[in-house]
Amino acid sequence: MTDVVDQFFAELADRGREPLLERVTGSLRFELSDGGKTDRWFVEVEKGDVSVSRKSLAADCTLRAERKLFAGMVRGEVNAMAAVLRGALSVEGDLEHLLLFQRIFPGPPGARGPRRGRGRQKGRR
Image (cartoon, rainbow, N blue to C red; front, side, top):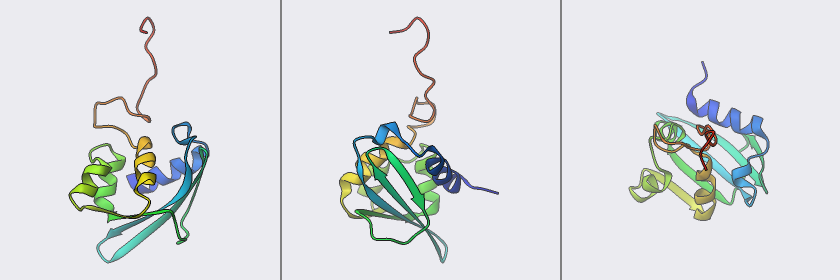
């Protein structure tokens, strides 16, 4: 069974192009630990074109967190910057990449985030 973290990275890879990142160029490595196991994903963004792999390459920004915390970010329950400030998420390298990348995480449950938005309703401006 695929969990929310695996699903997030699979969907990101399938998208190929992410309009919310079209002004972003750089790479991020995610190191997510669960017990004694660490899973890694490498995400490269080139002006909105996104590629995802499981390679352990050097990146502009490396994020380290517990897998459970990252799952909360993917569900919109945890804010990335708040997690950094309280020490639950560590960032090595260019913090700006995290700030830009967090655009694709959904907002809090019930909010209209980038993956949950339904667009403009008819009759509204």
